[in-house]
Structures are given as C-alpha cells and as structure tokens.
Length: 249
Image 1: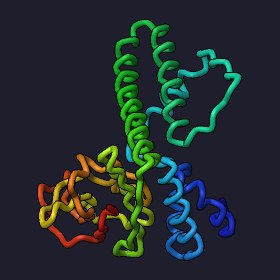
Image 2: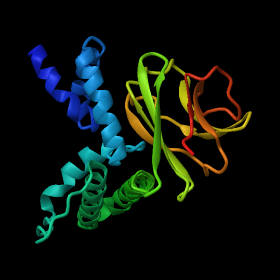
Image 3: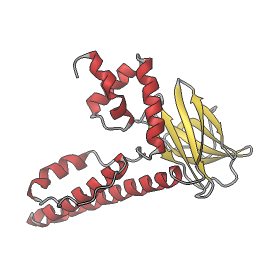
C-alpha cells in the first residue's frame, strides 16, 4: 500500500471494518483529504449497517495470536454441501466459535497448561457469544418488517442514522465518519422522552464508523441524541448534543 491511488480501493474494506490497524490508520489519514472516498464510505457504511455488517464489540486483541499458535494441530471441519450467504458479522461469529473449539481441543492436549488455556478459552468464548448476540439483535432490528430509518448530519462532518422497529421495541444507531472524541470522553446515545433524556448506550471511541444497538426499549421516545460525555457515560447529558434525530413514527 505504497501508491496513494491504492488507498482509494479500500473504502469497502474500511466500511466493513476489515482493515489491519496500519491500513486503517493510513486510510483514515487519506480519508480526511479525499471527499470522494469520504462520501463513498458514508454510503457503504449506511448500507452495511442496514445489512447488519457492523458490530460494536470486537474480539480480544490476543485472541488471533492465541488461535494461530494452537490451530495447526486441529482438524478442520468438512465444508457443507449447502452454503448460505452470511453477513461479515455472522461469518466472524461462526469463525470465532470454530476457532474457540480448536483452542479448547488443543488445550486438552497440553497437560499442565490446561487450566490457564481453559480460562483463556472461556473468556474468549464469552466474548464471542456477546459479539454474536449483539449481531443477532442488530439484525433483528434492521430486518424487522416495520423498520424505518431517519438520518442527519453530525457536527464535524460525520453522518448518523437511526433505524427503529416498534415491533421489536429497539433502535440501532449507525454512524460514519465520527471524529475521535477527546481523551477521557466518549460519545453517548440518548432516547428523548419529551424533555427527558434517557441513557441509551455508549459508542466505541476507537471506531469512526459503527452500528450500535441502543440500550433499552424505544417506548414512547420521540427522538435520539448524541453527546460527548466522560468515560463511562453520564446519567444526564452534560454537553450540547452533536446530533439530534426525530424518530420516525
């Protein structure tokens, strides 16, 4: 990835969070200077969000190295005769479950280190289950027959959309191009119940583009807001919103 033109080809991989860390950093530097790529990323991210191709939780950084060390001695499952098209998040969850099974099998053959490896595998399994559950919940909202979407610009040139399903009583916030929050700060989501703002979850501060399953029921909320709050979030907003959206009826 030495030629500047190579960076223009990474919009899709960036929107799907499929870049390695060094590629992501280089592409985000390019993104700040290339409006064509920025627009394409916004469009691809919104589409990816609608297809549940983004998730708010990531597997532990050490999981990949741990799996790669132990995977060589584990027999791979035979390919199935019928293959269905899966979203990237679903594929990641399936791959992680298979990899975790491999980790457990390898740990069983390593004698005295079994207990430590079991603890590591159990922690990774819980993380994988949380990722999969989050993906399934996002998919349920985006795929709901009554799902409706509304969008708005976010301060700093970003873009935000909310997909709401009253049948599931849930909402998903889809962001693209979010500026990195200041150190010690995090973007917090809110449901607006009239004049009262109800906490609805935190965004991942390291992700410029993401889909977030909002915490809690939609209920009678009329809108959604995004504010900058201290790490860990606040019970009530402490700053002016960077985005406000009216929920579709």
